[in-house]
Amino acid sequence: MRYVDVNVLFYWLTDHEEFGETATKIIKRIESGERAITSTLTIWLLHILLEETTENYDPKTLIKKIEEIKFLKIIPLMFKHFKKALDHMSQYSLDLEDAIHLAIALEYRCNIIYSNDTDFDNAPIKRIFK
Image (cartoon, rainbow, N blue to C red; front, top):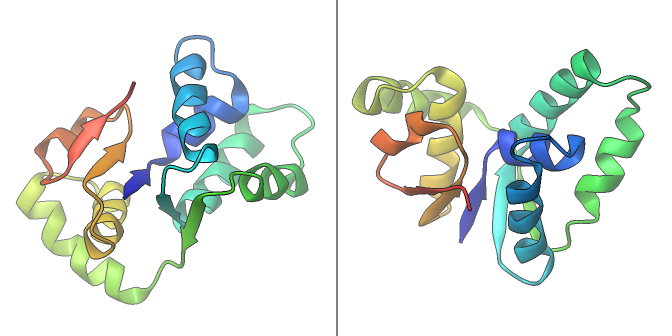
C-alpha cells in the first residue's frame, strides 16, 4: 500500500513545470491498479493551494479529478490521527501536517510514501518520488 502526499497531487493537477511529469507517472501507476491512499487532509490542503495559486479554480473540478483516480482511497481525518501525530512530530522531526500524513500511512500499513518532501526521510516509511 502506498500513501500519496499532497505535493504529488498538486504537481499532477497543476502540471508543474519541474515535478509534473514525475507526479503524473505516480498517478498513472495508481490509475493502473496500484493500491494507494491519502487523507481528507490532503484534499483540503489541495483546495487551499489551488485556490491561492490557480486562476479560475473550481473545487468541483478538484473533487472530480480526485474521484477519477480509481485506486486511490481517501481516508477520513480523525482526532486520533492528531493525537498520534504529536508523537511523530518529536520522534521524526516533522511538522504537524506531515506527522498527520505519517500517522495515517502507518495506521494503514503503507510501506511507501509518495512525496518529494525530504522531511519524510526521517520517518519509518520509505519515501519515493519517481
